[in-house]
Image 1 (cartoon, helix red, strand yellow):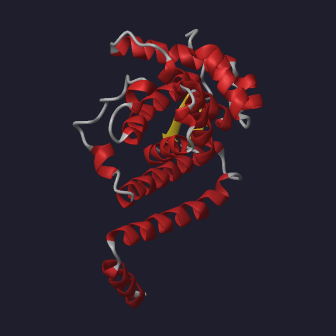
Image 2: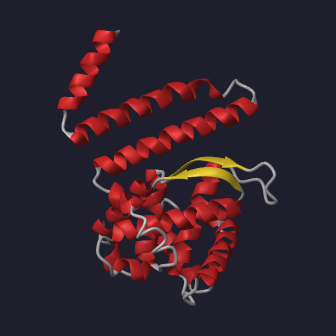
Length: 244
C-alpha cells in the first residue's frame, strides 16, 4: 500500500499541472459516483446529509476544473465579485471576456432564483455556465437578435447541466416542482432577467429577478413544449421579455 501511494505521488508530481488536476477531478468524480449508488434505500434524514456531502464533492471538483481551464483566478478574484450581478445581456456582450462576466452574473441570479422558487439548496457551476455562453456565441445566435441568443443560451445551459443536485424545500410555500423543473425554470427566469430593462440599482434588479421567477414558473408548460425547438423557444422568450 505504501509503495502504491509513493508511486501515485511520484506520477502526479511529474505530470503537467493541468493533467494532474484533471486526474484529481476524475478521481473525485469517480468517488462521487460510487457514493451516489446507495442513497435511494437509506432513510431520508441520512440521505439528505449524504446528498449534501456529494454536493461538496461536485463543488470541489468544479473548482479543480476551473483551475485546469485557467478560469479560477477570474471567478475567485474578490475585486470582481458581484461586479456583474445586475448586468443585462447586452452589457455583458460588449465587454472583454464576456463568458466570465456572464458566469458571474448567472451564478448570482441562479442561486437567488432557486431559493425563490422553493429550492433548499442547489449547485451552480460557473465553469459550465461560461462554457455554455461561449458555445451559444460560437453557434452564431448573437448575429440574429437578442432573443435568438437568449434561446441558445437557455438550451446550452440546460443541456450542460449548469444547475444540479437541487434539493426542493419540503416547507416551501409553493411546492410541486421537482429537481429538473426547478433547474429549467430558474434558467428561464435568469434569461428573462438578463433581457429586462433595469433602473440601475441593486434593489430594483433583485425585485425584477423575483418577478422573472414568477413569470417563468407560470410558463412551465410552454417551456416544456418548446425547450427542444429553438424557434419556438425564441418566440416564447420574445413574447414575455419586454412585458416584464
